[in-house]
Image 1 (tube, rainbow, N blue to C red):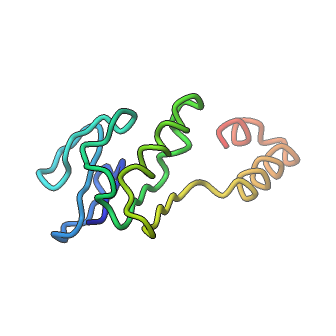
Image 2 (spheres, helix red, strand yellow; image 1 turned 90 degrees about the vertical axis):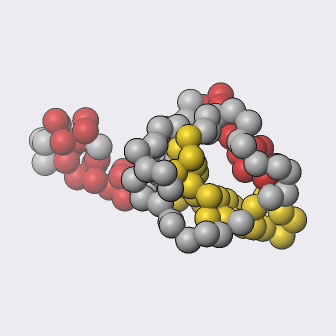
Length: 108
């Protein structure tokens, strides 16, 4: 089984995937509290995937979230977390500041 955490409206409909999110508008996505105990047995997943969710988790809840990812992962499995490119964000921020585009820099 592969698990897609915090998938929103971007999910995989293949039968080997379980899509989980806090809210769901699709029967293909199961509702779950992603910051609590995930609704899976220990070592149930071969792959745990999440895109652009980790950076939204309160800092004190990141470690418990990652522990849950490891708990549901089979030995030898893969956790793949997609996060923003910090170097690119910094370059963009500095560029806007240098250009006097402070509103754009604040948005970054």
